[in-house]
Image 1 (cartoon, rainbow, N blue to C red):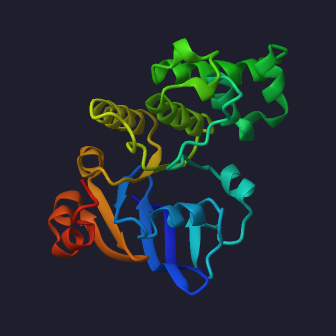
Image 2 (image 1 turned 90 degrees about the vertical axis):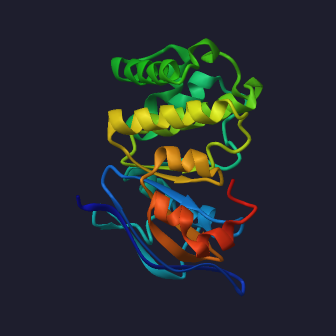
Length: 253
């Protein structure tokens, strides 16, 4: 299957520190890829580059053959890349439904507030219905009208993924989705992400410290250390790689 995402020689420096050094990466259409590594390895910086929150000093990024390297962030989102954040970034004063609806901005920007306030055209009602379907899918329907700032922490993770999916992305970037979850919540989230991947066929990259979570989801894993890629291959082989074990000892659980 052809690569959806192609990254070549990606290098990011902050002052004299190289957060990423010559990263090459190809992600196939429909793949569910795991990215692991210790703190400071460059995992979130990779996502920041792909969404153009920061710019690389060297290298290229292409989605479905289109160069993203110099596009502004809003145009990258328009091309179909959505992400979640290590620390959840919901709008606390908006309802859970309204937060999810903001994810569909690229499909109906002019109609978000009309739909949220009930003064909606048919297209705007469609966006609201899509948000409600996602809330139901994620078990959040009972919280639809609650302020997002009052959600239990675990549910904010689910709501943020629902918001990202509302944009109908081609590439979904999940930054430590299992971080901070109770042990019983982790397998349930892995199962839901796996189901969504199968049902929608969306390409997903998951950055995570929780090895059991990654292994439950991903057939292929990439490991970063100090901004460099040190392993890339089948999940079981990467887990047993001595270089990965040394880099991640005490960090990957």
